[in-house]
Amino acid sequence: MRIRVLPRRVDPPFDLREIVDWLGIELVYSRLPPSVRGFYLRSGTIAAILINSSDSGVVARWTLAHELAHHLNDLTSDAAAAAAMLTDTHDDRWETACEHLAAELLMPEAAIRRLIGAPKPGIPAFRNIEIRDFAYLFEVSSSAMRHRLQAMGYHIAGDAGGKRRL
Ligand SMILES: [Zn+2]
Image 1 (cartoon, rainbow, N blue to C red):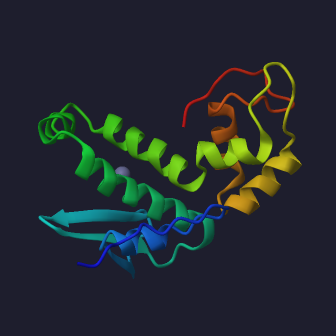
Image 2 (cartoon, protein in one colour; image 1 turned 120 degrees about the vertical axis):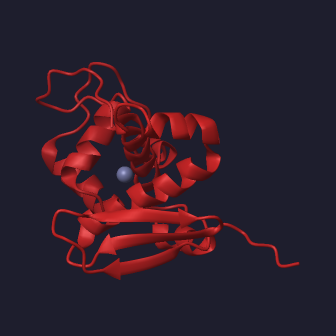
């Protein structure tokens, strides 16, 4: 029996394609309508992620993380709860859960803490230029990194403060 070990890179940027491949998900870059970033399909044990081939860089990367999150949430959620959520008035909670997981996949809390330490309340920790550097390092957009840092409780210079969710 072949033992499969999940590839884990300890430093950013994290290559989610390795995880997608390890999970046996078919990854397809395809021409899609401009308004569609990508989507996730699963039928039994067969799963596929489609990414709009006209997107690139951090946009395509976020889409991949989001669709991978759909797969992981799909597999790990209680089927009845998932079905109830999807048949609810809207599936915003499901989408929000996938956005949270996408953020964690691309910008793991542990990796950020290892690099910059724990947030110190009230002390402005980051300026926009530094957020851009971190965004570059993790290969995400500056706005995604800003939201992530705020959600983790880091204070951004010039912000009124307060914890934001992503
Ligand atoms: Zn989604």
